[in-house]
Amino acid sequence: MSQQSHTPEHVDIQPRNREHEIADRLSRDWYGDHPFKTAWFNAMSITFPLGEKFFIDSVRHFANNIDDPKLKQEIRGFCGQENVHRREHERYNESLCSQRGYDLEYMENRLKKKLALTDKMYTPLERLSMTAALEHITAIMAEWALDPESSMAQEADPLMRELWDWHAVEEMEHKAVAFDVFRAVGGDEKMRKKALKRSTFFLLLDIFVHLVHMLKRNGQLWNLKIWWQGMGFLFGKQGILRLIYPMWKEYYQDGFHPWDRDTQEQLHRWEAAQASS
Ligand SMILES: [Fe+2]
Ligand SMILES: [Fe+2]
Image (tube, rainbow, N blue to C red; front, side, top):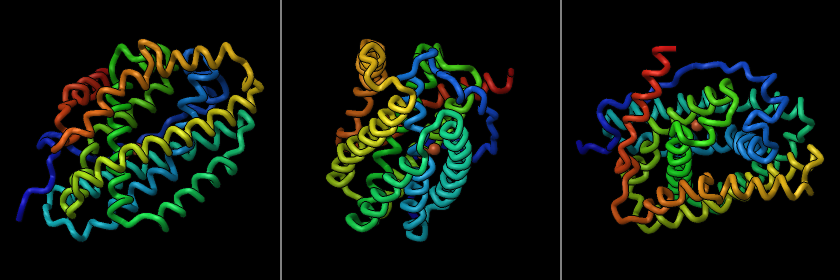
C-alpha cells in the first residue's frame, strides 16, 4: 500500500467544535472601522457555507478510492472541520444579513445556480481539482491572516479575529487533503494548474458581487474615497492580494505540494497563544 498523504506527521486534522458569539460585532464595521474592509471579509463569509459543502462533496466522492489509512483519516478530519466552519459561517451570515439589511437569499441563490452548473459542466475529477485550487487560496489567505503583521491581526475586532484565525488554522492544517486525494486518484499537473485560474476568477467575482451588494445597501456604493482606500487594502504595498500573489503563483511550479510551504510554526504559535489565554 502506498503512502498517499503528504501532510506532516505532527499535523493533526481534527475539528474544534467552537461557537462564536459575534452578533453585536457584525452590526458594525468590525475591520478597521472601515466599510470596504469589513464588507470584503463579510462577502467572503457568504461564500463559505455553500463553497465548503462543494469541497466536502468533491472530496467525499473519491473517499472509497483511497487506501492509505492516514489519508482516509484526514478526509474524515477535513469533512469534520469544514462542516463546523459551515455551521459557524451560516450563523455569521444570517446574523449579519438580518442586522444590516443584506439579502442573503439573493447572494446564496446566485451561488447555488453556479454550483449546480459546475456539477453539470465538470467531471468529479475536475471538481476535485477546483477544490484543491480553492484550498490553496484559503491556505495562503490563512498564512497571511495569521501573520502578526497582517491587517487582520492589526485592525480586526479581537472577537472577530478569533473566528477568522480559528478558521485559518484549520484551513492550514487540512490544506493538502483535497490535493493529496486529487493526486492519489490520478489527477495530473495540467488539470491541477488549469483549475487555479478558473477558481480564482470565480471566487473573486463572487466576493466582488457580494461586496457591491453590501456597499449598496450601506448607501456607500458611490463613495469613491471608500473604494480608493479599498483598492489600497487589496493592491497597495501591504495589500492582501499583492501579498498573497507570490504564494498563489507557486501552484504553477511543477511538482508543487501545499506543504512545500512548511507552516507548522504558525500552527504552533496559535496553539501556544490559545493555551496561555
Ligand atoms: Fe473552511
Ligand atoms: Fe478548507
